[in-house]
Length: 395
Image (tube, rainbow, N blue to C red; front, side, top):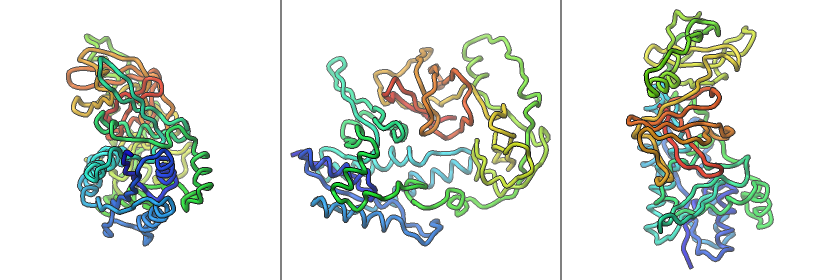
């Protein structure tokens, strides 16, 4: 019997994953990850991890599998929380869920599982794993989940071949409704439990509240940029090289405070992210205001009216060479190579037609149609059909 450690989170997805593996004849161990107990940055008195670990334990008892809790809060603070604060301070928007998978679940947690003699680690992610042979070598594929509404392949876009080789995704072939049905049939306590919201580690905490614990409020101006300013009417120049053209397409608009008018005040540019609409507290405009850029150095937020404001859209993005990651290393591009496929710049965004251009200094991704709110610090992931091939941090 192969031994599998399941990351039991106290939710329905991981509960059903454990049940299915047991049915398939694996020797299953449930492990709950405690990622957080720093009360200095917890906002509410609710303690979701206690409730979750309790539910995980009840599920393990019901399934008759061994269960224990591992405390990873120290590694979590170092690898995720400190990184997040640092990124927000620099005016970038990190993705804690992608990082949590790369740094914690499939690294620290996986090493603990393997040290317990496990052959595999399993999680309740909605994605699938494929295997192919190529030049006599086994290659693992990261495939999107069958439930299109729930597909979580994007969150796993930083996984490696080594990590995939040791991973199982038991519910990847199922719809969410089927997962709930199985949980109800097995009378698992998590059957009707709502999906967790908020950060992947603190549960019920609003991000701005969380950030305010460490990043001090700092008043500044909200500037509205009109959609007809000169910046947006630049003629496309003649380019001497492809790289020049790519640089031109990927560059973001630069704003100065006197490009627009002050329409309000904010508590800190580092609390805001591109495309954000809520929390600006500026009324009286014909169309709602959206954040089109933030300047953390000068502490200014630039906004534009309406979803179609030209400041929101860009045709291309750039990834620094050291932040380009291929899940399928065998398909990685060499300098001056290009590849046409589909990409997304955020979770659940429909896949977009795009072309990858690899250069010596990094990769440009040019989209068929301009994309809204391309945000530094977020991940872009590229796909061939339902297979996720690679990803990178937008720079």
